Image (cartoon, helix red, strand yellow):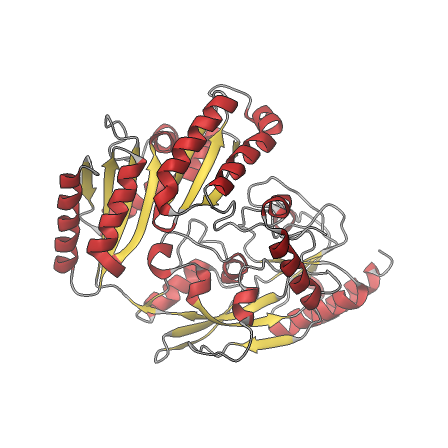
Length: 475
């Protein structure tokens, strides 16, 4: 800590005294979004350019000061929150928020890491294009954080994770050098794929300062349907039908359990939840079809899909949105499940993935396991069935002490769920990242060979270990 005053003086000279925060309420930077962890930073540093980021990193590297990169601080795995030691700086990229340009001919947009995701969606739309990344926190999360965690969202089934939407990066290394990889090329086989190595690395290998992103033509029509299904097997069957009959037009396929929807009914009575009380329908599916031809063509294909689904018995009832407003209402119900769950009380969250075909067996097995091992636990199950990602959350028993339930049961519940995920060949982190929250879990479930390779990469790119220490990989 003896070097702290000199370092802070150097940082003030680099980014301006107003952007080196050491006093006052720093909760917005020191506490994670779910309020599970509250750390303490040596300072919050807010550079405004890539050159300033590089200068900050060089100063920290010279003094051996840890750096915690931070975007919108909306992550769910405590990956952008400092520990309690007060020795690390939080490097906020919020001021790097320029759209550097749109290349219409190349269908790309080059943007800085601090750009809010919703702003990028709107910027693309104003230029006549679609940037399809969409998730609940899009009004406050930043593209740098999306790239650092390889965020997923609701349209992965069609467009892929953030990784698939990125053609180039600009990155500041752990030594304070700048790698300019913003070419926007779709084909470049000149050596190791540094871009994809850095995407999803959660700020542990380098600091993303800008990116070149793919743009797509705006769909001519977009239709949304909400269907009640008799089982998880039926939901998977409907997914198969949708793939066959909608093809690339299938842009979203969400599944929601009845209890998850009942929480929306209870805590958000202003929202209309279709088929919430329909007998024999323990699951509902929200699916979206985008079409590049015409709305009539899209509706005909959608209606044909629903006819087949009814004939096959995998759908009990369904409603197709008749307007953009109705479609937004249906999506609003789906996106309100996490908020309704929070209103219900503290809970144990899981962001897991298994092959979509194995969802029915996994859910049946794990539901029965938890019912036996954790009596009274309530399962809030929902997620992106189209890409095999399930939010398999566990709520405390009705009327119980939720805080005590978490203290006493969370380690055991996590062990049961993650062992089941491993048994079914899945992943304990589908789209939220590892962060600090799941670093021990990674150490337990990742193979020794994989961990050895990851540590070798970390040592090569960040030999001092100053970039986000304790995140992803344990020491």
